Every structure is written in C-alpha cells, then in structure tokens.
Length: 68
Image 1 (cartoon, helix red, strand yellow):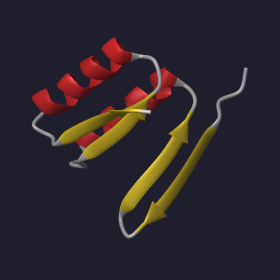
Image 2: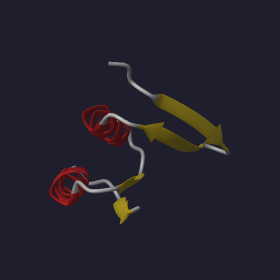
Image 3: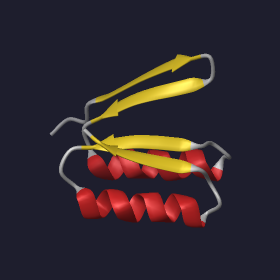
C-alpha cells in the first residue's frame, strides 16, 4: 500500500493533496503547532473532520474545514 502525497507552495500558501486521512490530520496539526492557519477539505469523514477542526481551534489556531 503506497501513500499518495503532493504539495505545492505559492506565496507562502501550501496546497497538499493527501490520500491518507491519518497523515493529512497529522500534517494539519503539525503545521498548526508551528503557527500556521489551516484549512482542509474532506469527502466523507464528517466526524473526524469536526474533531480535527476542534483540536486545531482549541490550540488557538484559526482553522476551517470544507466538505468536498
């Protein structure tokens, strides 16, 4: 099983395309710990997305999620 990840940076904004949900969550949390504001989208994992968003915001970061 491979992990499919792509990343692009434009003017200090990053776009990540990650197929592994656990890896995506870990990257969001790591970026937030470093001071980043985080936005992410999700397909079907409503409860997991809500939990990730709550964790990011509880850490004092501005964060957004969008259903794809």
